[in-house]
Image 1 (spheres, rainbow over the protein chains, first blue to last red):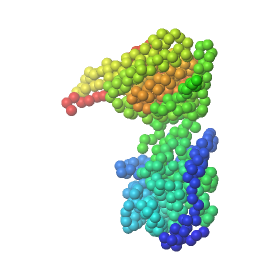
Image 2 (image 1 turned 120 degrees about the vertical axis):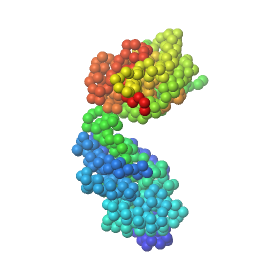
Image 3 (image 1 turned 90 degrees about the horizontal axis):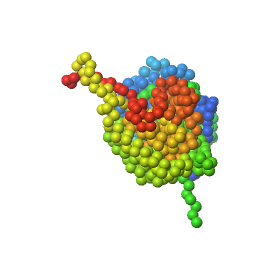
Length: 312
Length: 279
């Protein structure tokens, strides 16, 4: 494998070794996998797996401590009437809500549910490195076990790959040993699938533990072809280095059907060993209610309604 | 020499015309057994999708002013008038009646829209009330729409029965998932084309064609349906639906009267508001 020493030329020559993405092929492969029909016991398994993979997210300007506490309760016991429902993968909030979420999760019996903080001037990433450092350190100090950073898309698109790489590497050095680093590529702004593949490798080479599609603030977000390309990237990275990197699609995954399509993509692309919350997460908020309604349908034999799940 | 362009009769869900997700369709023939068309045969998942569409349309439709709803119902009558000939042809082909009988049915259906459009902004003042209470309060009772209503149109009528079923339900702000007559479903889909171009927001009316007996139990047990017009069911199907519907206390109604304000009131709940006098 080509070695990266952080210089612009080493990054460029490393990315040159990547095979280009066949866009038409990726789209048709993703569309074909989306036609798989998952039923009965497999569906039931997939629903529980998807619930345990959710990064239950609230990233609104209107967030309050009350709302964060409410989603923490929901994270621990998604369906209060059914103790067999697994807890979600993590809570994902803005920096100032990290402490509230951590304290409340601990109090509500969710000690093993990590808090993920969006960081580095999320969602735009337009801030100085010093601001990004403080943003990240503050979140970790307040109990964030996962840092969701955004890359500098402006630098990436104008070809300043060195800046993107060094920034990720710097944030990684702050997280080292204390928090998992998820790198948000914001694929909706990267224009082509080739760029998605390049950015994925750049992030992994710089030390990302997870690569994440989007902030959720830009459309399109986690489209199937994009997730497919990112899963192929982590699969190839594993073949090159023996290190397993996680993938987190976020944004636009609202229904059980969407979530199950994601799981099929994972199974068929990266492989079944990626079907674990350690290596695959889904960033979502409304999705959880739909999964719970589908779970009730499987359990009770009739269709549930939104009146039977919590409003959030 | 020209080959006729045949119409594909599809479902009407959320303002668009999908085929059944199951891919099924069934055969419709006229009274003499001559094949006419293959309409879509809705599955329980189409029903589920229709309920989701109806639920998401409920807020906007029930929040629209009564006057606005009345105008939109009247608009449906206007558009239907322009397509009357197509309805007449369809009814003649499917029901095997004379063209004058078909014409009469279409005219009555149009008049039904006009009749209920007039009711939209009057129902509150006629069936609501100001109550005398022993205290310094204004006390109002106001009829409000229930939510998502499922409806089985009468089996013996292809158009008029369906309009008589749908119009009173949506007049007050409910949204509807209507199951068309099993043997006479074609005019229902043509009616959907009228509604799709009448300023009616997508999802307010959803029309399914298919097997009544297959869909009825799923409608009965669906927790997000608030009420059912079971006029088009047999008494055995009706009973089964009422048992399944007891889970979420669905209000199940059947009607003998073809056109009556009682058909509006059946899908309304009366809410009482207390307001202190002098504030």
